[in-house]
Amino acid sequence: MDIDSIIQTATVYAIPVLFAISLHEAAHGYVARYFGDSTAADLGRLSLNPARHIHPFGTILLPLLLAVIGLPPLGYAKPVPVDYERLRNPKKQMAFVAAAGPGANFAMGFGWTVLWVVLMLGLGQDRADFFVKMAEAGVLVNAAMCVFNLIPLPPLDGGRIVTGILPMPYAYHYAKIERYGVVVFIALIAMLQFGLLTGPLMEGILFVQQMFKVMVSPLVAILR
Image 1: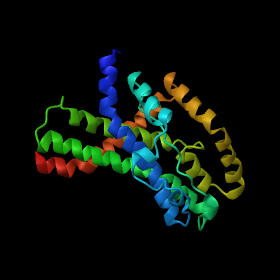
Image 2: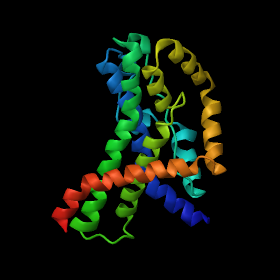
Image 3: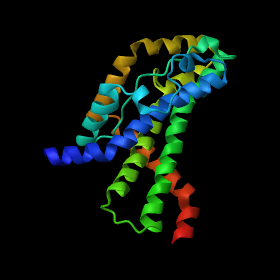
Image 4: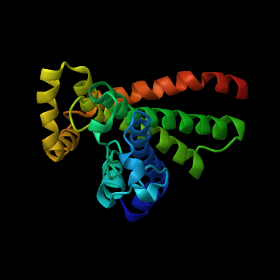
């Protein structure tokens, strides 16, 4: 891929990636505060400002690299701190805190789908239009983050949801996987690179995108 294509890809994906990752993290903090843990708010991390959450590698370089080589543009931000012991019911509510991130991505993905429909049908924008491409990137990025983060392995949100659901003796041992979080993340990216995880992940992404299409179908009917 030439330098012009890389720049074009970076430009199209920049805003969707920044907000997908930042709002994902902020959602964890907002739900944690709702259940009694104000750690993120106390440290100034309860913000929708992407600058508060950017991780130079995970937020910028990694998603761009994955997009350039044709893989889903996944990434991560600086994790919002959550003190699960401060939750009113830590065992149960940690699952809700974890689910807030993928939930935020699902909501954003739907929002980008609505924007795409408005641009394509409401305003008559051409498919080559920059904002149409950005909306398409927003749908893909958020669908990818939603599905990837629901993989049931700590430290991904899916793993924490499983930990919150399992009976305490099993949850205690399952949560220990989180100490190897960096290794888990690298292993998952490697599995994507070698095609071991690509099929199931892409099936999940396509399923979520199909859900967006079904949800937005009334708007499509109105604008056509």
